[in-house]
Length: 88
Image (cartoon, rainbow, N blue to C red; front, side, top):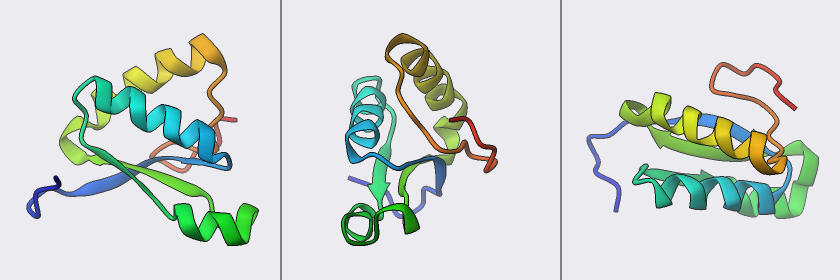
């Protein structure tokens, strides 16, 4: 459950709900507080609304390292990082 005093930020965005779910699962397995946003909008509007992976501001660095290792291992496709930089 999310604490109301934690700031959540968008770490990455995804065009694929499968890739977003894999990333979320990997972070949760490593104790990272995270959530997916805009999943329902993505179902109806596809490319117009990417799925956002939100993480606790305090855990951004750790989450970035976990996802970096994951993307190198199995081709996890993300659209952009927390700075909005395209990382395809």
